[in-house]
Amino acid sequence: IMENGIDGPLPGTILKRCSSGIRELFDKADLIISKGGGNFDTLGEENESLRKIVFMLLSKCRPYMNHFHVPLHHPVLHVISEY
Image 1: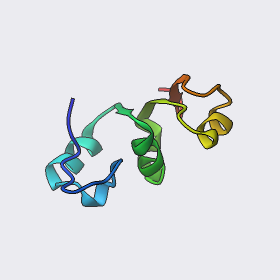
Image 2: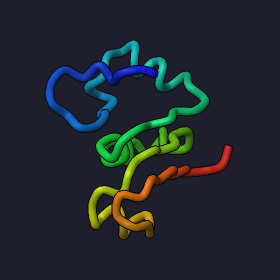
Image 3: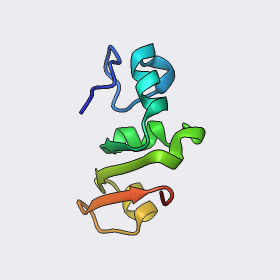
């Protein structure tokens, strides 16, 4: 379990704002389990890394309900691709 190391209020992870150590671990990892909607929103923009990220979040808003086809406050485990 690791924090993204970003200084300041940001509900998510933008890799270019993370430390070089975090980015190196991210690149070397076989699998990333990412918690929270903020990470889904921001890491979803990291196209080359999506193959190894599994997102864990709650459908806290209508856009998530529509995107994941689940009811409000429903837990979501979203896998981009199979390993």
